[in-house]
Length: 438
Length: 129
Image (tube, rainbow over all chains, first blue to last red; front, side):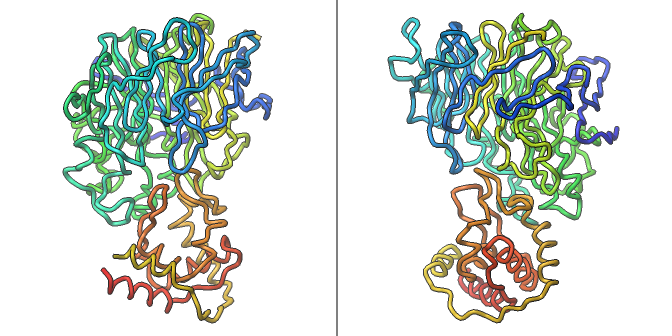
């Protein structure tokens, strides 16, 4: 199936359980942000009718993921990476007078740059570049008074795709994403004509998900972990769903098809593919990196050019997992969550919010992504077209260069009253979003 | 070895400016080459991608010594950010046109880089490899 609505192209596929295939090629405009609605630059975000955002905090630093404790305290990770970021660690925030703006702000773990945050049994888990930490709280203290424990360490040091994001299931297993340290496992990094390595040595301890005991201490990847799934370039967005009892994730697809293989790909084609893939995490699953990528325009998994592909040759069906949803290329899914609150209208219940950090590898075409989308679920799979839930982050209609974006959304979390929080990397801003119906 | 050579280049003062050829076609061809080889990461305005690809505007590599720039692009980058691949597959002619365009556009209207200069640097790198 070829889809000409490239910018908004999305196709949703059935998994093993044969449902009616749903091919969503358009944004569901009924519920999306109205592209003609006014935009307030000072606020920096635009939402569908009925939702209201406040600037919860502006934190100096390179923002990452968020987590909310049951008492409503918001925790916000800061990292330093690739020459960016001024502060690191975790920022704890409370809005004591409930005006939508944090008025009690404290910091801890300021010597640990990290990305992922999640509460499990009232402990705060924090994923840095090479460890997963666990912070315990004494009663209602906002900042942990005791040092963290290392849950898992020993991950390879790497500059690219280094964030250790994770999901924790209902049996105290923690699934840690260990990203691939390269684009496509070429013999020479991003070098035209350099073949892909087979076997790819970067799949031994990277480009997969490893499983550990979430209650454990001082575990090591090489001695205590088990490789749970492989062929995953970088699952920045990874989340346990307690209703369906499985982990969902989205990967960052590979780059540079046009620059490395101009004989097979136009700049325009390369701007739209490969798909940003959404999957269910399966034990023993192989998700195809670096040997293949998914092309939603052709609705098939394509042999990567580093491994002899020409942009059209597909790989055998069944060799690698098929996505349950596929989004336009280079949008960079950085986080996701399932909505379980009761504040938002019922149609949001159990659907997924996905945060797209936004592209760089679309130039010379305008950059895209830079938004939060919502995709409704039916049972355990995406059910229909997705919709734009939050946009306007870039502060401009046409973004040529990522460096010009005022905000870049990166993290999302749900508060105890069903409100949402969204964070930005480059600006360190956090918004709180409530449904008012107005 | 190529990296060591680059360090030598950085330390060595670039002297003896070559003749500046003010040829408008160089800028046209240079832009075309830039769009093909460089724009994806360094962007149309030379601003780069924060945290991933450094800007060319304001870069001492672009505005500074020409031997060092040629050596850098021929052998690949070693920045704290994402590594740039090597571009030694470009011909001496293409490399000189491309880098002349880059220096004039993003490097404070820098002087040209000649085909001979590219050939000389390439030859020196090859003797080291």
